[in-house]
Image 1 (cartoon, rainbow, N blue to C red):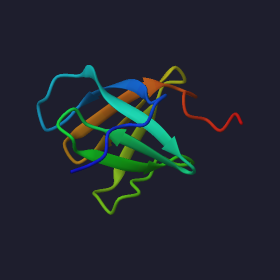
Image 2 (cartoon, rainbow, N blue to C red; image 1 turned 90 degrees about the vertical axis):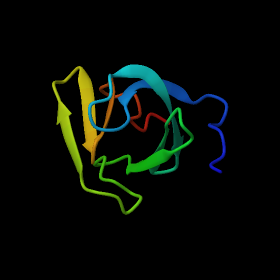
Image 3 (tube, rainbow, N blue to C red; image 1 turned 180 degrees about the vertical axis):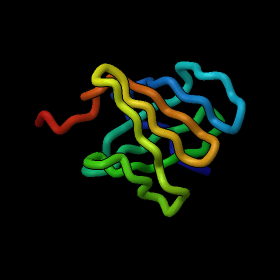
Length: 90
């Protein structure tokens, strides 16, 4: 079973699975150059921070941004968060 999110993980909107409704149900943590998105069912997805490319060998990610929000789609899953939320500001 996948570990739980670390302290400080950020809640984002997600819709896991085709036809799922978008809701604030996923947690994201940053591990170096990778974002780990944890699904409410215990599943997870990993994305490269720089280009949001899928980092877990899954289907290619489609990324859209309107300058305010970012939406990433991988297979039937969708994730949405405020643009810049995971930029490297350290």
